[in-house]
Length: 280
Ligand code: SAM
Image (cartoon, rainbow, N blue to C red; front, top):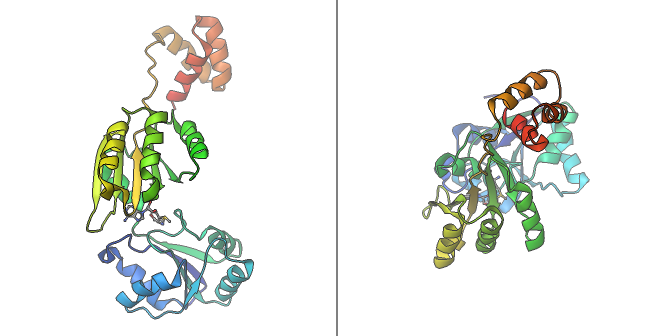
């Protein structure tokens, strides 16, 4: 593979098991002129394992503009730069956004080299609906802000995915049980691809109890997944109201259609509006 034009590669690295490193990632890291890494000492271990001796430079999203500018200049000189994070896919709860944004703005070609990503691995094995989901990253550390964030998600029907630190996992599960209800199904996916990999599904209240009873579940790296809220039933909406709404929705925005249909059918405006949202 010849790497002779200005390219910024975004390279995923393993989240635990080094055998998950994809061959293309090794090749790109070996051939690049420079690798920008979140923590150069951490990445040195990966480099030793795969016989990579490309120069490393530290890069965080809070790196000063001088550092970002240095990388961009190297790119504009026609050098090939690869970006990696400590583990998994860069930019997913990891640095890189500023660099990618700026590189693209300056006409640099940005190329992803896909590989491991903790939340995708967790979702693929969790046993929760995976057709629609929302990746929420890390919740705020402070209890008040965390509860507020959870409340904003309470009626979201998509599977919700969070990264969480081990020392906060129990508090977070308890807060989730409070806000979403103890019966809502959830999964803890811990230490994925590593020796003590654990994927456990249970209702939130039970899951919190399970984690409390076993200190080992409060260690390592953790993804939490929560089943989305049940869809509101439209059983209250009779066939006639549905017929009127369908006709009106063909011509009008949902809010206006619901207001008119409420006048025509006598059905509650909000019920009609919610029904229209479910049709999308
Ligand atoms: N960029 C990474 C990715 O693609 O998944 C995520 C980086 S984020 C700073 C680190 C968080 O990802 C951890 O705190 C944990 O929530 C999750 N994580 C990373 N590796 C994991 C693993 N092997 N098992 C479970 N969760 C993991």
